[in-house]
Image 1 (tube, one colour):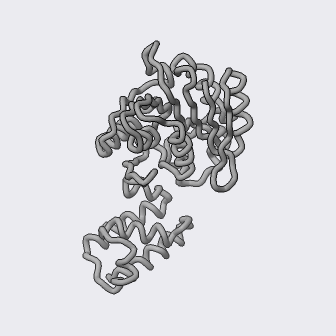
Image 2 (image 1 turned 30 degrees about the horizontal axis):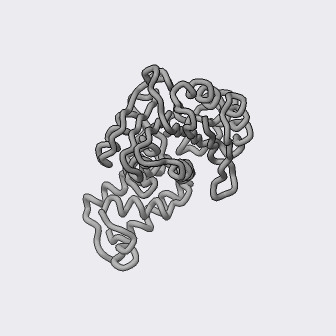
Image 3 (image 1 turned 120 degrees about the vertical axis):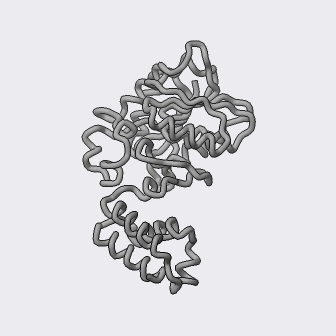
Length: 277
């Protein structure tokens, strides 16, 4: 079958399955299978696709049609201009989280030590280390499966991060201190999770989404447990839900943090709380 015809078939398949951005996903899957880019469709759409590639494309379309996230199918997601391995053990890195990294980079100086709590794929701490010099990083996650992904990302990006399995700060030795804490903790209220998109609700790890009853459980714990592990003057950067800015700010203010600021995303929603010990 010709390349363009196969693309149209894929688009129709995903549209019938009510996949959001069906035409985009159909094109990206075809490019993934055929090792091509958008120019192939525009300039060489009449070229024939090899039978094996055609079979693989239809197989992957079937996965996407049941709402397996595109990134889990291809195994990769770009974040901060870097390629990150992803699978169903980790959240898919999102553009919203890039705002957290960009804000942290404003205060990150060469040689600093960074703690990434709830590190998942490692995309936050690895991006910070990639774009700085001589910084050291520790990433903590309760999921050993997530940390296997993070370690593979570190190896691919030559990022020297000490990844540790544990329940927040229990993974750290007493007395160790950091210059910066970054975190994208679970922050979705438990009763909201069933209402999420099928791709998220049924495929991304629930333990990385569920912020307990009001979505604020991990912010409360981090605010109380982090201080012994942070130098005086250390910065804290937290990704938050779109309506959690005031609540998270209050939690950290009451715990004694200062210089508290809410950073909005490109849609004007609260996205990051930054503060200082």
